[in-house]
Image (cartoon, rainbow, N blue to C red):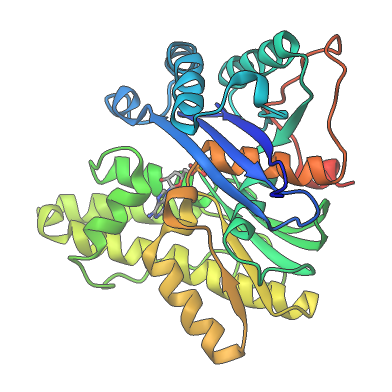
Amino acid sequence: MAKKPVYILGIETSCDETGISLIAGFSGEVMNCKVVAEQLSSQIQLHQQWGGVVPEIASRDHVRRCIQLVDQTLLDAGVDKQQIDLIAYTAGPGLMGALFVGACVARGLAFALQKPFVAIHHMEAHLLVPMLESSHIKPPFAALLVSGGHSQFYGVQTIGDYSLVGETLDDAAGEAFDKVAKILGLNYPGGPAISALAEHGQVKYALPRPMCDRPGFDLSFSGLKTATLQLVRRLEADQCLEQEKANVAASFQEAVVDTLCRKADRVLKHLGLTQLVVAGGVSANVRLRQKLGELAEKKGYNFFYPPLAWCTDNGVMIAYAGWHKWQRQQISHQHSSGLEVRARWPLDSCSN
Ligand code: KG4
Ligand code: ZN
């Protein structure tokens, strides 16, 4: 007789995507789980006119969408609310108001259905989701988490044991893409916009590779952003910015990608590892994957990425992180416990 699946509902509302998913896990084997249904509502168009995410607009749109998307996900899955075994929700890091919306929906639903729940760390979910489709990823490995709010290297001893090796001292890589896109007059989010424009340009301008000239694993992108701004002003003054925009985009992207590759190589050497999981929104960058691929070939490394659809925020990664928690029995039945979400939440502090 087929085993009864464990149905996990994932709710992601940490920033500007309302992501809901239902996955089915099959107990006994961590890898054995599949996505049953998934809904994603992006707020990009709402924020575009402001050039970045407006927290209040984000919260309000999550309120509008969240319950409706939960209903649609269950309808698509053909699964009744009562069949849900676990509700996983993002509890941080992220925008407080936005996090509260998802947390309230998740905890309210868990209470009404008398089902267990689990608070998920958004970056742990990014880190784990590549494992959903690749059974080759086995700890120990290194992880590079590159998103709009984070740029960090971790050593992953086992699932749940994360040690920070290096991180950005200022802007995150995705944030730098977003800010430089704004400087170039491109739309939010900047990563895909710069990447698309760079395809029509050449790496013509020498921009800095921050923190590469000194030992260590930390990153910094705010100086690179300023150097790009100065370049743009110079080109503007010379009245040739329009025809040079694609070259600026290609040169900036190459500087970010090259810096991440050099540091990834350093981190792997330092940890004595050959496997690197790359996740978060910036891991969708084609040039980054290309250049890391060249590095992998040269040095005998193995790099793993999530499928493109799960690089940026989504509900699948939250449900999948919930599945790992279910396997470890790190879930809660305490419906009367306080509802806590965190804007900041270091991943190594929630190692278990
Ligand atoms: O992981 P994510 O959806 O949200 C956060 O947790 O921050 O990442 C969003 C970030 C944005 O800064 C966006 O510009 C960047 O990921 N991004 C990219 C690409 N696609 C998204 N950056 C570079 N190249 C891309 N193709
Ligand atoms: Zn994210």
